[in-house]
Image 1: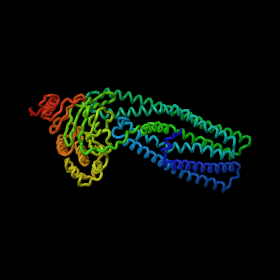
Image 2 (image 1 turned 180 degrees about the vertical axis):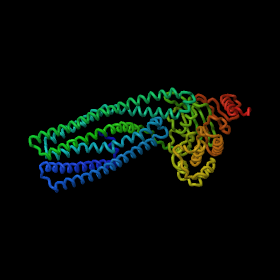
Image 3 (image 1 turned 60 degrees about the vertical axis):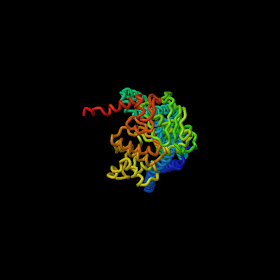
Image 4 (image 1 turned 90 degrees about the vertical axis):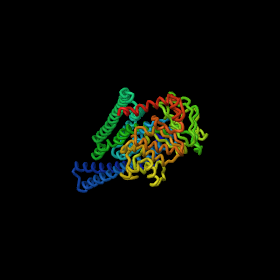
Length: 575
């Protein structure tokens, strides 16, 4: 029931957990005092010996007990909140720092969807474990011992019977734990798999629609959802059955203790006041342990999630490289191979990107263009062959330096919720307002923002309150502020309006005058000014050269160019 590693991660939460236990114990003590006063009063009332002092004492005890229990309840709530908040914050920081140490290629070790699930819902599941379960665990053993110490002066036999029955509840919990651990492990495994499938399908929804594969994918998703539903129902059934068992033990044990007390009352061993105390306090022997059983099921879910969290935190980390980014940014790709799940998508590619050059990579979707960009950004590490920058193997360059000197912009560059200023400062943390406005002017976004709230214009999550073109312009402005040695534009003009595309391409051509630029584009009209163009097909380089050279070869590039020009000019002659 206690996971050692979770205990080690408690940190500052220890004091809040023990504060919670202390508050519950004080509340129990006040309840015992109140019951003692009420039992004595009822005994005297039946014997007709009660006076005003007895009534006053019982009333005062009841009022004081209610006040104390109210205060203790508030203290419990506060301690519960503070203990869980502290640990949740710590665990999320550990996950975040782990991802930073894993680097850009973390997705090769663990799916993004699983990380999201663990860092959000997985950590939230531990709220009950730290906020309620641990404190209840200690209190559930402290309360019966306290009640035994009190009732032993009334009836040692009844108190002993009640105390002996209490361990039956944790015994039942431990029996359930073996089944629950295995079942919850399957639950979280299926939950993570379902989330991974959902995210993958959501990201590829457009492609699925284009190839009319959405219906097949929907059926597959429904099958996985049904599997998850069944295992969820098994978890709920297990929890319901175990709760029933605990109720039988709790109320059966209380009833047994009361019966023993009643027999002693009958033979005169216990007076009426003592009998009333046994009746009123018998359930309190079992309620803390019964409540522990209720928290146990939610806590077990959290512990199952923690297994996944700690598996993530224990992933082997790549060696931290010390090589700095070179001043000369000649990039050379030699005999590059890369595979996804044993399916090779890049076959022995050789490329060169000269320092300060403007190079483009073109080809149909799925030919391996973006995979090469991911290798250059070290998002994909498990490649074979050689990739060097300035003669240094890219795998030997410190990843922080790599991110400082290479800027990657794609058609889904992420914009965070906050102000325009907040998002631009991600490109340059110490950028002043003049530098930000200069970057916005260069991407033709300044006029729009001046009509809004300027740099304080609020941006929704993923910039949903901006158009596609405005999002890309803002992402480009942020990239300009970064001012790195190398820029990689991966379909940076996809899915935006023609005006925005023209503005962005103008700016890319200007960047290429004094930076190394790699442009990946499906639209060949955007690469005509390139110093060199690589044409890819089925993971291989089919052609290379300038725009004019490639057209004269009448090969793959020429075919793609003619097809695109025909589509773009369709209807113009008729008009």
